[in-house]
Image (tube, rainbow, N blue to C red; front, top):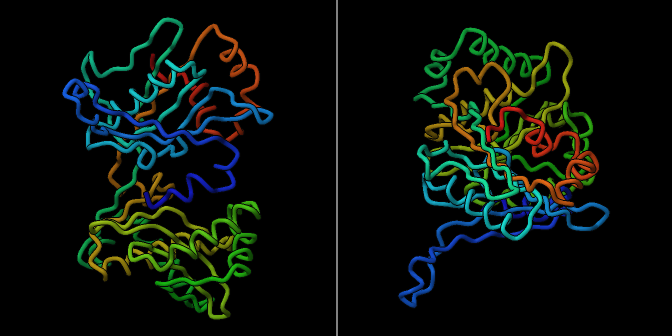
Length: 328
């Protein structure tokens, strides 16, 4: 629940209507008891010209934050939520669950008349097991990764006086300046909102909010996440766009690894995986996508006709609708 502010109040979330689907055990209702809550799914309904479209999706493509369920039951809870929304005349439902699908005839997606149901499983390199020392961790990694994790922090320190800040406290102007100069800048509204969220959560004991700063005071990188039970989750990172011989992203991650090892952290989890060579040393985790589409209806026609207007270019649901690997 630490990410509720993100899922409910971010500029992107405010463009959609949130819906909470609760799954209860009706089999106990005959005893007159309150049906126990088995799981919950936080969904969003897209709007077109301010009107609801009947298109629902979870806002977490990594599947770990919007489907709340006991271990190994996430896919069942996701399917139950999709079934209920389709029963209530939804046009399409897309749910991502941080779990491999169960196998067997009673655990596969099923379709009612006029409804197509499909599912796929993706594997994302996410977990990096740490060691008792930074040198012993590097010894386990590939030669290129090992070289980069040593080279870039040293270069940043030698040329820019860069140093690690375990408790980053950039003010709004510093944060906006780094965002404008970053490799993947956010919109101004998103950056302002994110700074406010990070600043509010900075004092929480589980929060990771660290950075790398140059000797002149400018921020080169900021990283944010959470610490739970010996695992540090890296949720988000922003890096200054250096020239060809700097990689502030790799330098920041090297400094973070060394710091977390010193704290006794067992593993790093990169939410959504990591793209550079470090991914080869990470353990992969499964993510199951469940897609249900109503066929032959006016809303189905609207979904096909106005998909580009309803769903942004980078939207994950839009990609799933066009993915031939979504097996029916």
